[in-house]
Image (cartoon, rainbow, N blue to C red; front, side, top):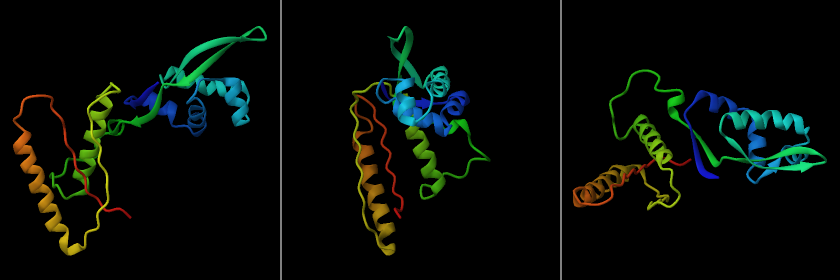
Length: 179
């Protein structure tokens, strides 16, 4: 099972975005038969199989085994990934591109979409990555000071490490209000 399956096709998105299929998919985190999932969801195996078949056709679920139960061959299925991301390109950009203002919400959304696309392209499980998250409190009168200091610190790092030899990494920092 992959950690992430990035959905770029309408067919995959359409197959996934049905509440009953999402529930079936959740129950396929571990290998299970349609009979087992049906019992957990209080549905018939045939109804569950209908949804599993659509998910298999879309590449979101795989058959991992089969077994004989009272003379009938029963499939064992498992979700293809632990997480499913929908590509922003499924909808695409509506309207023209705005001026890239680092302090705008539009710029932040573009940055997050770029990071999402880059992460989806990484198909290996063991990668040298770093994730840091935290919260800070900024009174309105100190926001500009904080942003300026953060920008200067990062620009110094880009200058210091930007021309170095070795593996290239992307660095994306986002600062947004938390309600």
